[in-house]
Structures are given as structure tokens and as C-alpha cells.
Image (cartoon, rainbow, N blue to C red):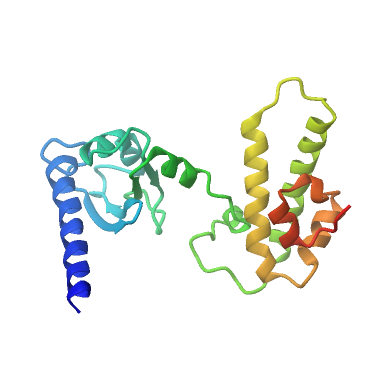
Length: 215
């Protein structure tokens, strides 16, 4: 019981500290986001929180512009704060992720895309069954990744665009992982094989999950 009480007190104290810094330095006086309200939640890797801006005074882009200021306010390294659209997606809100390390922020920025993003539904629970549009997007992403990878293997790219390679693979990874539990057995594998994706195009863990056969 004592440990539980201590954890509760520690969490409350950390949340109060985050709020006090925000109100004193970011939301005023003379901070970049006067009047903005933060609803923070401490995390093992830092903290996150919804930001409600004063309507008509600031917008989500202003919070993005203040990311380095926010990092400095909380004693974090430059690049350790990520600002995203909020759950509601309205212009007078934002969602802030503040990490102890820049690498954690970079990892967050490269979170694999989900097939739901293309419909603007990523903030809502996924349906239990994938729809046709999601499978079509998975096929498109798989085909684009395969095409680029095959060109690289064949030496057809003298200057490799590493960002494009990583982006296409991460996007495909997100699509596969999100669709596997929402499709019939073998359906994702069939989509991949229909566009020519084999085990050599994917990391072993992803190829195993998709059920692609050994060659």
C-alpha cells in the first residue's frame, strides 16, 4: 500500500511539475503560446499531452514552430519534441510528445503508417474486417517497395535514395501488421504474392508473419 501511495504521489508531483513549467514559460508570460492549456501525462520515456490553444489566437503550426522552445523549457535536447495533430484534428489543438532522447523522438516520427491513415480514420478503432480499399493500398505499397528493391538489387540505381527505401518498407510493415488480424488466413500473403513480393523483399520477421514460403 505504501508503494502504491508513493507511486501516486510521484506521478502527481511530476504532472504538477510539467504543468508549472508550461504555464510559467510556454503559455506565459511572454512564451510562444500564451493562454495555451496543457493536459500532460508522464511517460517512462518522457511525457506527452494534449494542447488546447486559445481559439483564433494560435493554431497547430504555432505549436510545431515552438518545438525547440518547449524542449529547452523542459531541459530536453533539440529535436526531442514531436508535435502532431490532436485526436480531434482541429486547428486550435495539438498533441505534444516530449522524449528524454532524440533517438526516441526520431523513432516516433518514423512510426509505420497504417492503411487507415489514407481514409483519415487512424484515430478511430479499426473495424474487425479490413475493407477492399485497405487491401488495395497494401497491394500498391507492396508493389512500390518490390519495384524499388528489385532495382537496387539489380544495380539500376547509382544514387540510392535511402529515405525512400526506408519509407516504403516501413509503410508496408505497418500495412501488413494492421491487416493480418483483420483478414482471412492467407489473404495478406496472397496480396503480397500477387504483386511479386517474396521473402527476399522483407525482413525475416515480417516474412514469417505474412506466411511467405522459404525459397
